[in-house]
Amino acid sequence: PATVSKLNREAFGAVDEWRHRRLEGDYPYVYLDGTYIKRNWGGAYEGVAVLVAIGVNAEGFREVIGCEEGYVESEGSWKAFLLGLGERGLSGVRMFTGDKSAGMLGAIQEVYPHAMYQRCTVHFYRNVLSKVPKSKRAEVAAMLKAIHAQESLEASSEKAGDVAAKLDGMRLAAAAKCVRDGVAETLTYTRFPMRHWR
Image 1 (cartoon, rainbow, N blue to C red):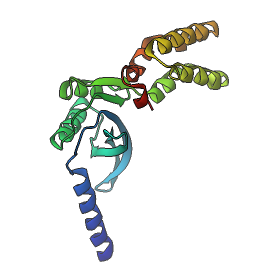
Image 2 (image 1 turned 60 degrees about the horizontal axis):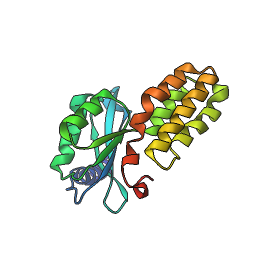
Image 3 (image 1 turned 90 degrees about the horizontal axis):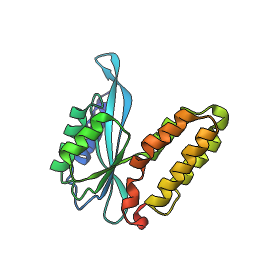
Image 4 (image 1 turned 45 degrees about the vertical axis):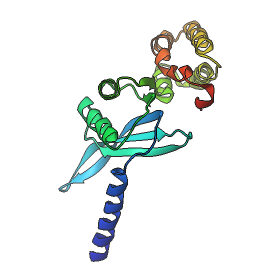
């Protein structure tokens, strides 16, 4: 037990040092997400949110730049997380990508008002596919991916219109509405140089 305790202290110390390290240089693109894990609190297991930020640096490489317990994915938790990243040196952010949680959006607008927001395409696809019968999901998924395979905002928007019309024709009106209502916020990346899209 003494050895395990000693190793845990060393590991936690290294993790804590990494979590509070200074962020150097600009991170033009930042991905945000929250995941829930079970944690033992005095013998009782409770779910806590872990907030994660992955930054793309000026050279185009991704790295985890932040990871904190938020307890819940509230606006207050996201705001504290983003403020902490700013205090550690996060700068040059042009676009945040994340799911469409209201707490995250409000915090981004307050802490980084000049950065653009891009809805995660995976969350968008899941939202649309939840309104599609299982037998047609593979076909619809391919149609959705075609929207984001276009060479410009205009081409992607036109393709989205075609996909929505085809979904209407397949009697999938709820999925078509989801595409029409949500596709624009998944196309923010097209406002940046094409070499950055990937």
